[in-house]
Amino acid sequence: RVRLGINCVLITTPEKNILVDTGPGSKRTAELKEQLGLNGNKLMRGLRAFGLTARDIDLVILTQLHSTHSGGCTKLDRTGDAVPTFPKAKYIIQREAWEGANNYNERFQDAFYEDDYLPLADRDLISFIDGEEEIMPGVSVKDFDGPARGNQVVLIERGSERIAYAGDLIPTSFH
Image 1: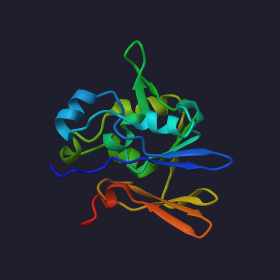
Image 2: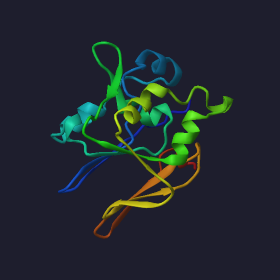
Image 3: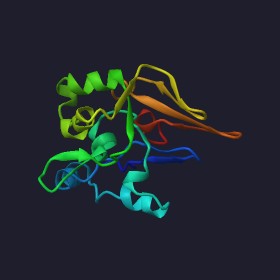
């Protein structure tokens, strides 16, 4: 196995708390441990370190809908139903990524799980975009088809700093 990080980015501004990707979540921990060697989900603990809870997240930008990026969008409630992890958030997804996740071919048969993202649509929490868009001043997205259709890169500008969160488009330093 090649060891890779599954990272999320937290962007805090005076107006909004933005989460980029949600990681694999906790719905399939045993399966993902076997498949990918994952040892649990540390996202909520990471948010708590910044004094935030799931209810404090205003926007979730998903670079793509593969389960390692969107699995944490939902969690299982007491009845076993998938419900939004970040109930007050709007989820920003490229329309092409949505179409790819709902009409995938055999190459991606194990990459998408509908319970990661369909409950968001059922509750009208998704904001679809097409291509490049400014999410808010200093935060924009640009469509770069990469490992999946509708893969988007998040561009962050703060003062003189510029950050590009490329997700799986650049998965290792060798890329």
